[in-house]
Image (cartoon, rainbow, N blue to C red; front, side, top):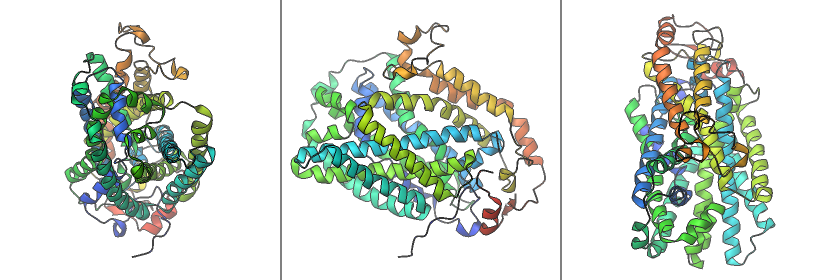
Length: 502
């Protein structure tokens, strides 16, 4: 087996010699990062909106598949440009203008990796407590140390190690998750599930938006980071298809089973809010608790690994002048600090989690709409060198996309609410003026702001950004050191010109 060295690539365009593989290989990292048993808990989260099993099934499936389809479309830009997502975004926002969405992306990925490590720590503690091995502070500290070490190691080493880890995690986690489903299948009571009362259209929309933000919209800002290693001749539809399939297959399956379990047991449904994964152990025989801990931790590590890799790239795109592996280390330290706070001091998970997803989901949805429209308008390859030069065709700050992002976010935050997180009570300020019943009305939990931010970002860019894109593509290929439109410079030369933070 060839040795795995620390990846030297950072924000640079991947050279031809390093671009390899087939689009089907995208299945493994995306499946491995989304096969976590946390998907079972989303069944409880969805029913928490006060809707029936069938409503939750439809809303959840649509939310998961559609949001990961957005990831697939963004991944196509990675294949075209062979650069990280937050570098390709510079074509729309300008080199320095892109620091705003890059900062939002960085906060989202650091937040997600923290959430996943928190869940792994809590799940380990719960399992050890049930086994009588002690689930107190010492266990939580040990679990936090092990999970953090695995996550940071993979983030620092980079792409090759991540791809190998994800393949192994996929096989082990999928197999043990299937065993879990078989063991608890007799806990399902179809009569209780089908007796759940139906909710309103607003509640269904709220569940759909929550599933979108919990799955695909949590990944869309990093979707091109792995497709960038594929040859540019790879068919775009294959990139989008394998990304969507790999990412959504496990969550949809787990959601269905999670709905059945939560709908069958009100006690489990309530417990999941406090400890989303640990609560699932209450249904298990003692002999499977250790394998369950393994599947839970591995599944969460699989997601955290992709997050810390992309968060490091996002930090560089914000302007940090450090190597990629150092950026991953910085994010790892923040991840540990956030986990310590949430595990040992906060004492409440679901409210903070929901507020985090919805609040950052709005600007990410707006950015996603802008990025998708910008990608759809382009008919020629990106100019590699100009992605790193403020005086190139993409400009320094492109104020129209920046203004669209700010306006769509402002509108979006005015149409979302987070009743479980008091520090976000300022949101929803447009619900009253628009006649939607205010923050306590029937539309308050629908969180329309996420969908509207996505639509506004896409529509405004598609209409207003066509001429700038045409002007960019009409410009002659740059003669800069970073490469030309005909192809990138050698990898060593690219790294020399890709100064961190440029």
